[in-house]
Image (cartoon, rainbow, N blue to C red; front, top):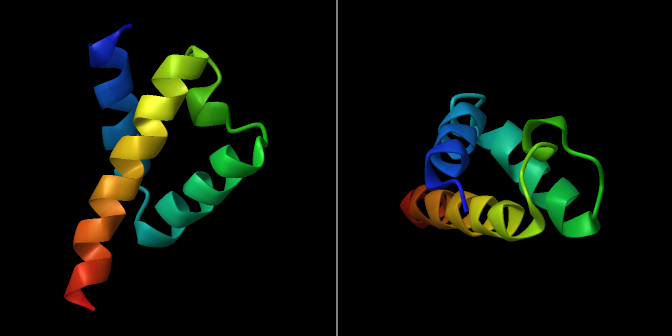
Length: 63
């Protein structure tokens, strides 16, 4: 697993804003093609999904 690539992907997605991250989470969960994770393996995509959910949990707890 390329942890550096996973972290870069998460960072890049988070820079797009909360709405984009939520849309990406939904798309990954639905099995849709998400360009930002195309080069990642399935396990790496799962890590990205987990990390994005963790980040959003922090923001959602502030509401």
